[in-house]
Amino acid sequence: MAERASRASIRLHLQQAQRLVGLITDRVLRIADQPSNNQQLYLTFPGLPADLSGVRLRLIVDEFFRVYEFGSGTTSRHTFITFGYQYKLLDAGNKEILAYHWHPSGPSKAKQPHLHLGSAAQVRQRDLAAAHLPTGLIALTDMVELAIEAFGAEPRTSDWRTVVAEARAAR
Amino acid sequence: MKTKARAKAGPSARKKTTPSRAKVKAGPKRVAKKTPSRKAAPKSTITARRKATKTAVAKKPAAKKAPARVKAKASKPARKTAAKAPVKTKRPAAKKPVARATNWRRPKVAAKTQAKARANGRVPEVREFTKREAWATFDWYARTFAGMSGKEFVEWWNRGEFAKDPDDMPGVMTVAMKLPLVEGW
Image (cartoon, rainbow over all chains, first blue to last red; front, side, top):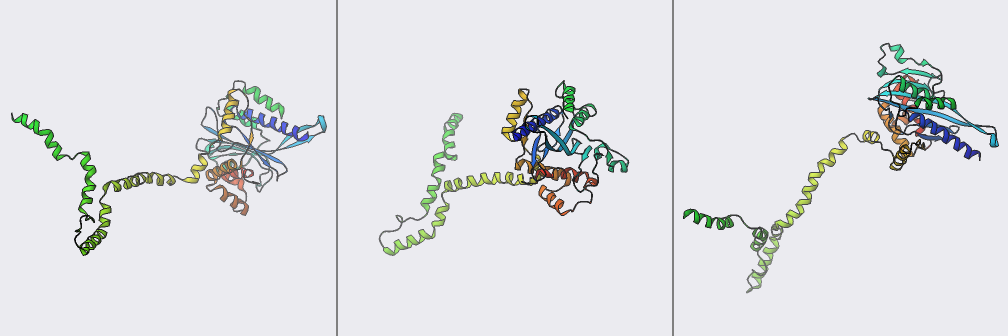
């Protein structure tokens, strides 16, 4: 029962992520299982980065999360906790405009969530271009909203604001 | 009168100058006639027969060459292959591994179900990666952002040959975040 419930909740979570991403691209996310890494799940686009609708920009999504069960029996509840991400916005030539990173595990010194400004952002100051600009935790909802509002991606449905709000409330 | 005569002579003259199809087909037979056969050898003496057979054996390769039809048939497919051959050789000239990665295609079944889901206004189902898809994806990222194949990247990463902090190299970090795709298959 617990397995079924967790599967159902995972499916719901993935559906929500797909619904969000579906606002700005026609691509479908895929999931990879990592049994060796504490049952961590990895969500990303298969193949090339996703082309955004209405603009010549591309999006890379890499999200790592785990599912935790609280309570037992009928009162059990599943929570999804993110353990790292990479949301990257590229231009048509696959040059990086900006990248939100959080990789708490791994060889990098930057363990806190941060922002990179890429070569396509055309930052003249070298220090700024190389800096890990600290940020709070960024979610997929934030990235989708940013793509629409700041970078001109055309939302594929008119009620995109409600979709984003619902996803935000469900977090 | 003269013109009439020419007109009358015309077709006959043409017939003489341009050989008909039947004649062309008969061409190889003529050549074959030239080669001495057993029948052509004098029957009177045994020695003469032997000589004739010897000459026939000696001239056999020439006789084989004579039938132009057979040769033409044999040469036709060779010409075809020769014409197609450069096209085949040109294809691999385009960078093969990169093309593989960039020509990534969605699985047909998944694409169909996704299209159906979209048409019905439903959210397409998020499925699990297959091994092939995962490697193809990783390989494309490694080639595009790190300038090496996916396998090479994994080897370099495991040996620790990148900079101390891979986050300082944006391309490397982009690929490194994709490593879970190819781990554990």
